[in-house]
Image (cartoon, rainbow, N blue to C red; front, side, top):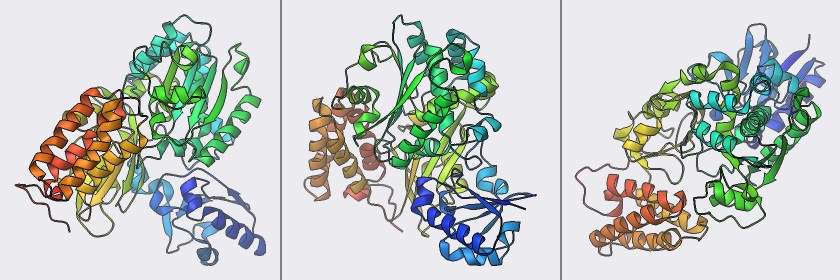
Length: 519
């Protein structure tokens, strides 16, 4: 009887040796004359267990975590093809608490399907939303998205349905849909995992967006550092087109949507929507002034729907299950689920998709297990390199747009990076300013010059040069950048700088009433 073995093709799993493990298992099975089928599935998102090998048994899939080629012989000796006990054994994968305690909507197929198997995708609910959308008017699709409460998962949190309605209502011969997959924030990897692990879901979301807005052409702008995602998306587009889920006359509906992949050139600023549009048009990525809004004058001056990967990937579920089913998750104005990405000094890093309202403590200590090197947690940065640092006594904050904003922080793309007591927060503040100076498009003075001056002022504070006066100067400079920058690059850089300065003044050599000793 043939046994199915699942080994991820995710970039992280491959970096940790998944290809070599798959080859070693295949060779060992051949030598032992055992009938096995190796399926390169997507990652489950449990980074600390990669490469995760799963074996299909009558009871379910049994997992073996952190497998290396040297472990293969002992796995066969332990009869792992029948789910035998082994020191790397994780038991039934679906029963692992890290997975079991999540609300997986976007990542429902993660680790289960072959990413490029259309049959697999459809068998697990794929294209159900698109089938419904093909029979609906564009305005009705927009209404469903509006009522779901879906907000942009790229950082700004703007209501997705409102953006789509603006494009839908515009009168124009040609409209576009652009997916910003230039996932450049530190500690984020959800977009990459979707594109490598469930590419048809992104395609489905983009086609639905096209139907909603009246667009017939779409682009996926993927950062150059994601070669596997680029290759997988291109192959998935070919497969979807050949099977009439893309292209002309989609599923004999008479409707058209053409989709292409475009490779970015490594500029962080192209994560900003208008800079991405310039790049797509063959120009240097520079931020545009708004208005006009891209929804009215976007790509090539035409009405354009722009969202990131996670935003588009929430749409198939909304159309398939209904707006209320999606809105029933979450709290307040933060509806649905968010794939939080846990990284940094953690025992268990990876993807945690759950409804809004979970606390940072539940994510970092519950799912993540806290710092893995035995030192106490000191700071957590939420929302990428432009996000605020939260201290150890702020872990009970709820993870939703409004609560974070009320506490001087932001959700961003859902990246969470944990630091222990060995971190130098003055160095982290300096990094934020230096990062801005390097990645600024240079169009506006507060960002271009302010970040450069910011590095200089922080260096003076660290060197002990007139610390109090320079700290006051740094705060004034941050106010200028926040109020005067053209986009979020310069406007949000002060957030990590000021949060580090006010919460960890001792690292700057400044007086404090609350000393947090490095463990």
